[in-house]
Length: 99
Image 1 (cartoon, rainbow, N blue to C red):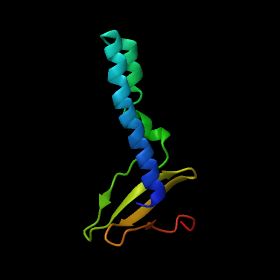
Image 2 (image 1 turned 60 degrees about the horizontal axis):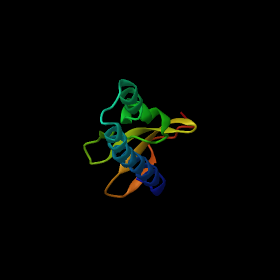
Image 3 (image 1 turned 120 degrees about the vertical axis):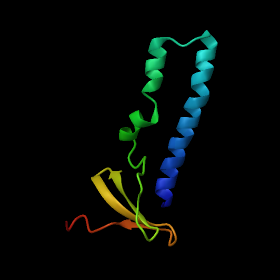
Image 4 (image 1 turned 135 degrees about the horizontal axis):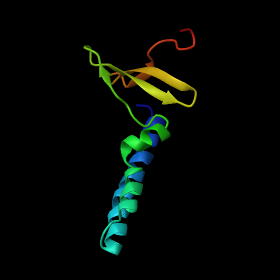
């Protein structure tokens, strides 16, 4: 992955860790969690945040030669990318503008 994606992933991971630390501490203060607090916490689970983070997840589709492709959400819409881990290269899977 390129540095921009790694930075976004790092920021997302840091936010998730922070939520994992804060939520139990807040619940421990009152002794128990109310249904409203639980429902609020559920909104911050990964599947509920994925649509809010551009480039926040990768569903890899592996190819027989060790490369993989995935669909990336960008500010301009969806883009398909081809990743070669051995070459450390990420490139568009095809010419999106031409298609």
